[in-house]
Length: 294
Image 1: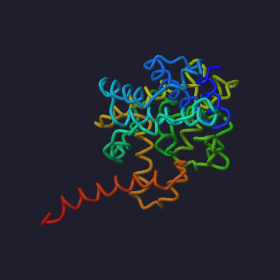
Image 2: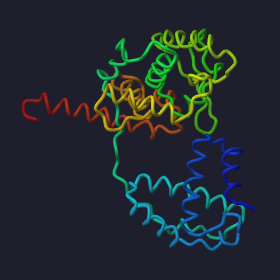
Image 3: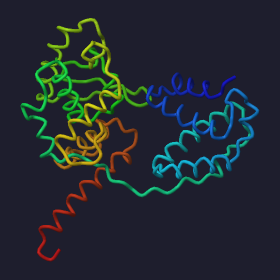
Image 4: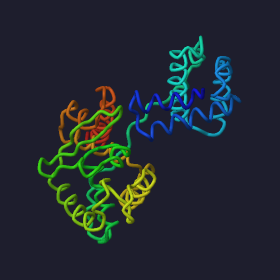
């Protein structure tokens, strides 16, 4: 039995992970098993994987120039996989117990300043055609809701309720949450839907391509990267930067941390508290610039 295929099926059916997450796990594990010369269908070969093989793989990843953060993410995939093998009785000992993850420096979330985000309202930034309307809504929805890339791609027409001014989002672990729709966002949604439903009334997906097919992560990433390049000098230009911007700007305006946690779909307040560091950095910079003795 192919234990890798079994594991990925487990992540899908029992854990409810998104297709994007499952694909990342699969890529990480294929990479490691290929490096170690292991066939996942040969359960006996899985029994003999040692911590030395994992360490050697780690060294090769570092040698390829991967950051410690990326290496740790890949090691996390291995840890989950070996725990699964242990529960299935395929292995008797977990090789990850003797693997120490490389230390990573704490990195503050990057966000777009409010003044730069305001540039999205520039009249000639987006075209008047269908793609222009869609791209404007993609950028605005990320910023007004803080949702993840996979969550935005997974939206359907039934997810958005303009009468109740809410969006139902399917987050990590198939957990649903409700995000309120800002009046400014509602206007853009209505404009997009009017055009979308004229052209593609059959498609269920909320965001579609110019051919009526559901949008996919790479397309959305390219859209965000393009427009962030136009409005901000930030080096990092991804949908997650807009998520960080949403949370940071709310916190700067005095929003409650627990409320931000619920809006972001974080399972723990610890994950949300990272944004307090961002706002403290801003406070510290203002202090250093304004205080006569600073």
